[in-house]
Image (cartoon, rainbow, N blue to C red; front, side, top):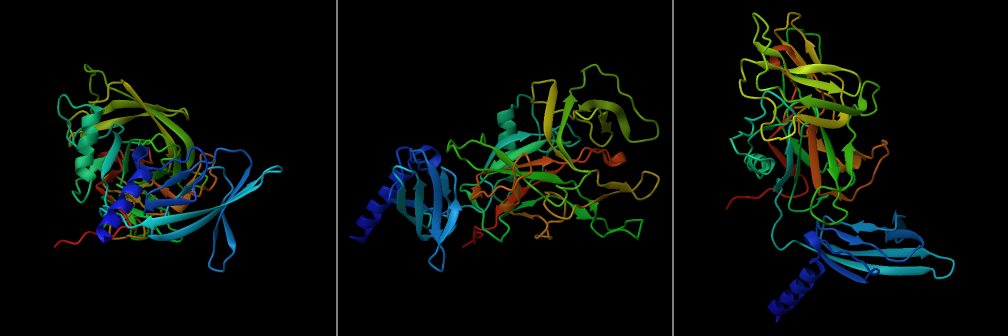
Length: 405
């Protein structure tokens, strides 16, 4: 009998979760009861006008307002029973509606790690076409699959995002819950602190820091693809005057018959290799060097120009040698990928609560379905080449690690 009951319950849950991408969408009002697995969303969309107030009972038994928007997205990280109240203020027909939500443990354990890469669109750079490796005939779809093979689960193979704006978009097999007061996910890169800085009177957090800006998006329309609004996680540099918001850059594919312009007695084989222009009136080049002889412009990208936009961080490199032989990139304090060594978990972890909209206003999201990382600086560090964000893994900090039997 117990097994029969469990089967019926499972069938009821599957029915509720049978909408697009497993998200139950309420189109004709709000039900009294919902059943859902933890870390899965319920999108409530009442179909009647008025002023809304969604609330929940706090520990003292008082109503705590959750939202005054018409739509409400419920998302819970823990199993249990939840009780919501919907109040509709209307001069003719005021409504109060109690909602009970039963949240279950998932039937199949969630992965702590990346399970899907949706987009891989690097800007030109010295590691592009090799991290991951391009092969003749590759398309944007196949390169996206290669990027997924590199950074999903615990494979831990580094991918490069190239110069400013180049990005990757990935997600998990569940919604990453925004837990108040806690970091929600972390991103593994290849940053490190310098061991032999010739300048002893500098901060210790300088070395190889190639900061990537992190953005999050919630699948509000429930279609399972990253086409909803994006929100930047505002890190330590967001409000600083030297940070450039609304930055845009365009890179141009070098002509096949371009004549290289090498720099004598240097590793630079073409100082005018990939031309770029930005919306601030500046222009320059991604310089080609002898260490990386492949093409730097993404070979699978058909357009001969690529435009990226976002927030540009101030340059973080210093030539501490004074002669171009020892460049140090100093880490920003917090909120950026590939900025601090991986052992500094507090510095490589991110809080969805940092999200801001395009105007810089704080946005309270219940969680994130999609995460995007893009290179946040536009700088050339001498013989080291352009700064490019790299990453090899991401983890949901609210999902336990799998243990091997």
